Image (cartoon, rainbow, N blue to C red; front, side, top):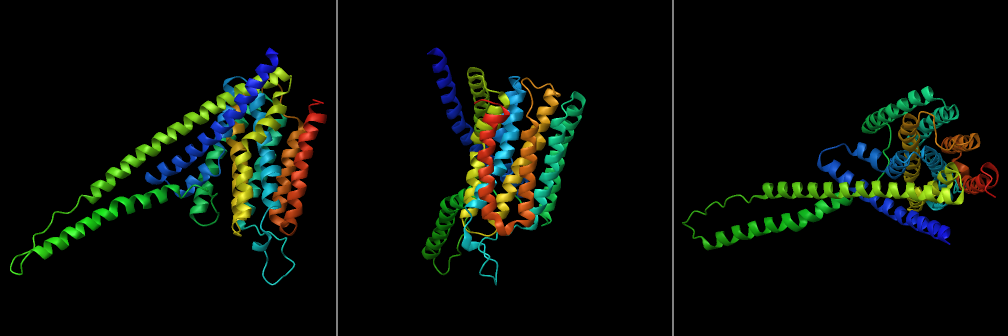
Length: 394
């Protein structure tokens, strides 16, 4: 009975921490973007580091490594990367709005989805990175992992810099953050609430003074209203407010990552499951729910350009996972994983799904709905095979 209560408690803590993780990630991303805009940071860089990043996954990875559960961390990263493609990308293809993707001059092109140049470039970059990372993970040696991990971390920095420059020159399209306009809306509301009454009151004072003056009297000049100083004060206060909420979001992510890692460890130990299995399936599915929602909504809102959002967010998330997150795991563990590595079958699924997505972006626009259904079915099959064949739970 005590054993069952412990499992139930850890399962409840796992679910509750997921809500805390997503809430903290949303707060962190939104207010990071707001602080960046108010301090003059490039909007391109904001897009890459918010919509195209997986901060919640990084929190889980760091928390798992801190508890010496490197296998759980690696399984989570690989599983999340597979889930982003076979789960999130497939939903975007499966539920796109048919009437917004017709090609002109052809009545039979309702099944065609058009991907832009940025989508093709992003997908190729991810394919090369996935092949490199899968190969290094397969050959688990201390020196190789240390060097390759450092290369991946440095490569992530180069990727962000190069892509930011390319977007600035119009070569690529940045990932889109759905909440990126929240701060600008606040600014506009703030100006309408505070700025306009000041100008109105100032104009009314001028009118009253003009009416009260006689023709032979000179109208006195009123001192200028301290509008600039007031705006600076409001700007400073809002910056402090956004910074405060950013810190709260970061603390929420850190706490949720620790709870998730602890709960996942307790559940796997109690049930006798593999850390890799739990990370690849349960933890990865749970932490990639937002990506599935973004993929679904980006293709249901009806704009043809949203195919770019679908690809950029999916690919950007996987580049973040397979470069920065895997790099940190390799440097920290040096190949000495605590409970085994991901299997060759899981690496082949990761590489194969990435190749499948890249081929779809480049050549498969006409069969995207069928591809989405096939990918989703493949993901369900992958989950079942993980339990039945790869890790032999049943």
